[in-house]
Image (tube, rainbow, N blue to C red; front, side):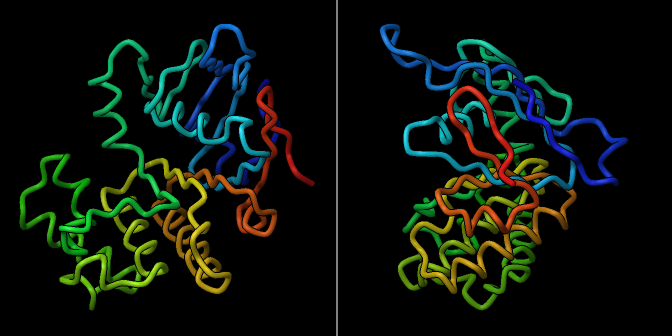
Length: 237
């Protein structure tokens, strides 16, 4: 089912940045699929939240959109490029170039300094050490953590670690940013700050973002919010 929505006026005449069509994913043949024909279209400037009960397939949808998992049916295009289910290497390269992730559990590497964690996507893309350092420091400046660039993750608070995760997700200027419960481990005040930062940076870069959450208050920080029931995405009023 294609999700109905009213895109921002500046997005009406642009090609879709994300087209996920009729996605089906089942993990056991003797059970109904987790996702059964779910579709989602985003254009540059779109920032949406997806809610739903545990087990309805929110993270599964995110993994399919990112090419981390393969659909049993359906297709995904990012910025006009197809995620091919039969080509893991091509999917990996596309993901590295066009997708940024923000995880609830941060997933920073404890043995790397903050700036080295942020620079990891650039290393995977082949940037030189000087380029990686310059761009990582610039992004840390944007998220208010430049003074912590040479510290290790264990020296930072939870809110600061989530800012590191956001900086890492955005440092390579991805077209699509995916955030899976990014405030689940944060106190309300820090969560609000992180959500504002995430939204600002996505829109500043001219990309699009998907925010997965259980919280209506968090969902309300996005431009639009949907409820996923495994078969469709229903807009929240």
